[in-house]
Length: 310
Image (cartoon, rainbow, N blue to C red; front, top):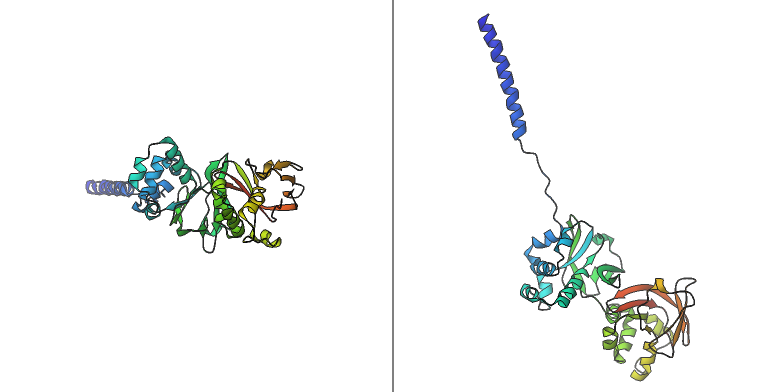
């Protein structure tokens, strides 16, 4: 009986030891973990290809923004893109003037959209960026098939996923456009750009603040048989200035029947908003705004389908 009792105790003890070992094994087995996805700032800082971009983000105090919550789209220039303009980490480090830092910040924010947009979701359009002027995002021109930004900048690698958005790697730096740049970057405005150039108005329209430009497409010039070669600089200036207001006016601010004097003070525009936005002035009636509110750093551009003839 004693032997049997001893065996019973041994069996129980062994069973308890076995259970204890199983519990210990279960406790000691590591639980698999899913790798944490990097933020947009984390992706940039973890790749030496973007060391200049990271230096710029740090100088402009934007690292926390791109580390934070949100759904951003960042068009990220590589080091070689910055070096095209002589921009290096040393150049970034040397910036100390507050205005220059603010300018750098604006340029960087011009590379960022406020929502996540994968490559397949891009369309031919002007999209607002996080660089704002008067509370409005400065427009980035996007074309697809292939993807180009502001007509010349290429996406070399798309859809790099981040925890707070997506990164598209680009081969050049995006610079916020003036009203002249908006026209120059779009082949729909080659006639307008040629006229502005001949009239020697490029510098004036690029450097003057708070403009509204009603920009006629090429077809509008064709429709009036416009002959640029036969038109002098002196004759061009009153035509072109009839398309410009001296203050920035977005489409939502235009009222039906509203009137506005252009930079050609002999021409007053009258607006009709009963169906879209139309304007009449000089010899031109019912020019239609076909694309509105393209925001530049020094004003806003509205695309129209007719030339305003004084």
